[in-house]
Image (tube, rainbow, N blue to C red; front, side):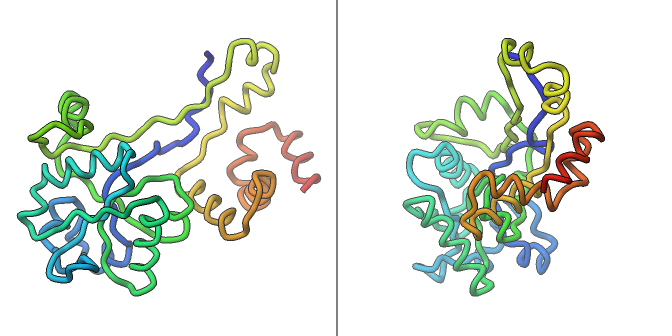
Length: 232
């Protein structure tokens, strides 16, 4: 395989998130330990006396890590319940409902996604440095009985092609693939637009080309950019 550009310039991100309006109103909340000091800001809809950490569906790796983080950060002792959402739709619905009523929300999510393009969310820091050995042996293992707080590492997202493709495609195509990189913010917004407009991949591509010439014109030659603009 031949490695081209890093497709997501700032990496794919998972972790615990809060709404931006909560982060703005409470600038002291920057990490998971900060948030866990305030169960009153993130009420459990089914148990208002408790705070809630919303988890993903069973079977997701992020759900396992969130369960382990809940134990590691001693969230129960801070007055929180771990709330199972049951499905991706249930998780999304919990965020949408919180936004609709401008309520606090704390839980697992990831980027890039259309939901984060629609609702402004802030990822909390974990408050500790990354321990790769502990991550592999405990934070990601459901049966590990004594997880410790850990950083949640970003995933590197790269464009890969076969050597045969690279040789056949030629230097112009590979030059494009070696430059094509965009941010989570850009992808989130594009995915949200596609969801809201029930758009196809072709629709999304055209929308991106029309709205972000400042990005894609850096990926292609001036002549190619001129032809693409003329075709839109």
